Amino acid sequence: MEISHIEHIGIAVKNLDESIKYYENILGLKCYAVEEVPDQKVKTAFFKVGDTKIELLESTNPEGPISKFIEKKGEGIHHLAFAVKDISGSLKEVEGKGIQLIDKEPRKGAEGLNIAFLHPKSTMGILIEFCSDKK
Ligand code: ZN
Image 1 (cartoon, rainbow, N blue to C red):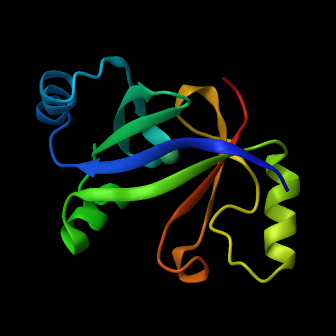
Image 2 (image 1 turned 30 degrees about the vertical axis):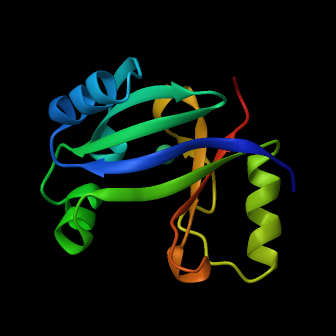
């Protein structure tokens, strides 16, 4: 399998608007997209940092995965996303090496990317996302 770069870092926040202000006013980054992903019960905001993006995630539902994450661990880094050349092939490859998958097949994520998650139990505690490589 071939990872080209870190596509994005996903960060769980309680309040998207307040968080956008911090990234823009303090860090000087520009939010270039806000998008709701109903499938994952989140509203997302994106910033570019070189080839890598920061994806802020606010839950749109108290039962959603981001709400549960914040309840357990508080706000903070939620997942790390790698851009891979062949997402289906990469999933099969890591599964063959004993890694537990959350998504056996790629699905649609924010920005029209194909995404799939690996289970953090198999990856030393970090929720790993594969994204189809698109710039
Ligand atoms: Zn992500």
